[in-house]
Image 1 (cartoon, rainbow, N blue to C red):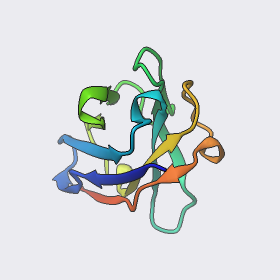
Image 2: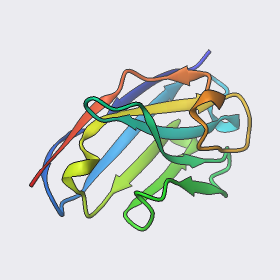
Image 3: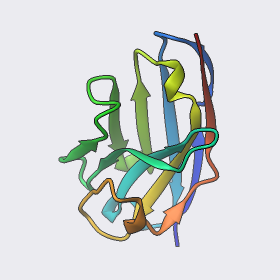
Image 4: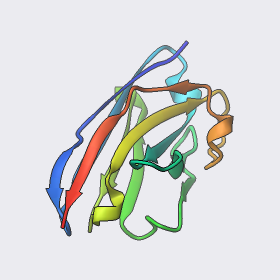
Length: 124
């Protein structure tokens, strides 16, 4: 079992930056691929970024490539999402998720555990 708690959300102006963190409990964190997803108001949840168990492979949605960076620190049981050059369309609840396999994927249906989410609001 893996429990996930996100933090770091907030209100930021367009062009600004935020770093989200996701702290995982459970002994298997270092063997889990991890992902970040988001749900904007009135929209379905969409993929943002994913990372393999070792951090050696990362994956990004086209909408965030070049602006967001996913990383992980297995010693701290934490995965991060550094978000730069934020846009109003990035406004959403951001969710962290864990997958019971080593390889990362942007397919949200492949993830077994989910956090409660953290709100990110980007003002224009």
